[in-house]
Image 1 (cartoon, rainbow, N blue to C red):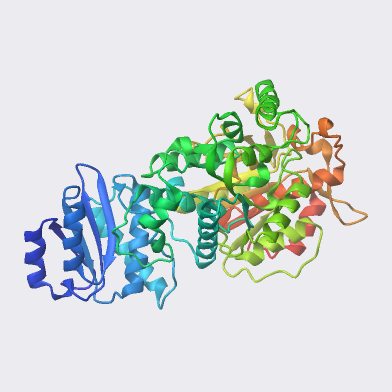
Image 2 (cartoon, rainbow, N blue to C red):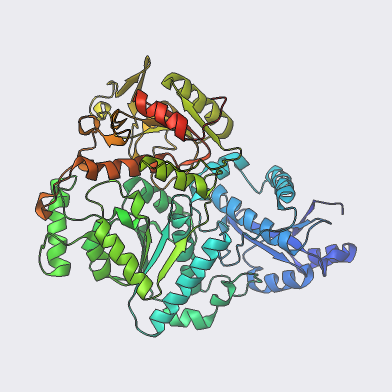
Length: 577
């Protein structure tokens, strides 16, 4: 065989034996393989140093399920390369949805190794060969832009995420064995991968409970948990749920769970689902836990009544201080909260005081685990911290953003045209904005919501799955459609709700220009009356979220001339903008 060849064989002892006679690298050589049954729609991906021995093992355990094997043998591969390619193929196959994977996710690694960038190009060529041979249906670009790929439990974790998942799993097994009920806090800025971590954790635990891949040949810190010992600790009836306060993200995750072996869409819950349930959970993982609600006017009378009824049912009274977090605690034995206080965007979100208390208590019980490695924005974690500092009115030194495409536009039409170019080239390029314009088109589909610089735009036509919906590139998404998601390019419109005060030279909030009714609503039942400075914190949080969605780049248009001038001097925009 030559470098990067792929042998396609019947998955039988005879076929594999004949191949071993002519290919000496079936013993003591790193190989990646895919075994599948196209008619049944099942596949398994693995890597091994002893192909002959491993295939004999698979024939005993999977011979009745799978019919064909592809052996990827490359004379330049080593163990690290094979582990990486195995992880990539698992993630791609899961996103492609042609096959149901029989793998667990415990062996998926994201380790660095020598010349990894070059090998990533080799992997793309291998993908093209496999797609031509019929293993994949979708293009690589479509796969990697899909929500199933981005939110997949088969994504390789980085070292930071691996450390945290390991600690959380160890905490959980300790607490289950010792009948201890604690709350674990995982705190991380935008792009540190909190959602992916939560989904990975739930899949790993379900694989332990179900006995998935207990016979696997794995190189992973989590491999030791795939055993009868840990399966017995949890027990077959161990009940797990993922709580997602935001409707848009919840719908996306329900589709991911529906397509993932061992998971089910019913496992993805709203806080109201948790509160109304008659049976509790052994473990609840709460994504974007800062968005859990406290007592306020809900979006409908039905939810207002439900809030009161749930309080009565679970907590014995309708004390106005009860929050959806109290429902989570009442309905679960163990909890993992994925949290970032600086992504609270409405007054009805968990209060800063409650979030500080959660972090303090978790530190005291050694259940606080920070995520620090930036995975989304190519400019790195310095960019996220810098954006937040600037919006707080500070004047930090600008970081080196490398090749990150950060641009300031003085014409909205020009920014929209640039976003459409990037969407044609890379996909997932969208306009987003603060809630500084009324949503007129919600009731009148022909109405214009945003009219600036001679162009007219509408808000997102749907508040569910907007990012991937038809025509999204010509609409403007709000915070409620993009929080928790990745974009390749984000075109951020900073509306007149933020201005620069000409006297103090500070960023200030304009209540008259802010149209998120729930975003500026007082909480009379709690005695909370919001000042402009109070709301300013939520609005700047909104913009910090919007400005940290873009993986490859962020384009910015600012309505207020003074603020535009201020940001032009403060943010390290590209000089050719």
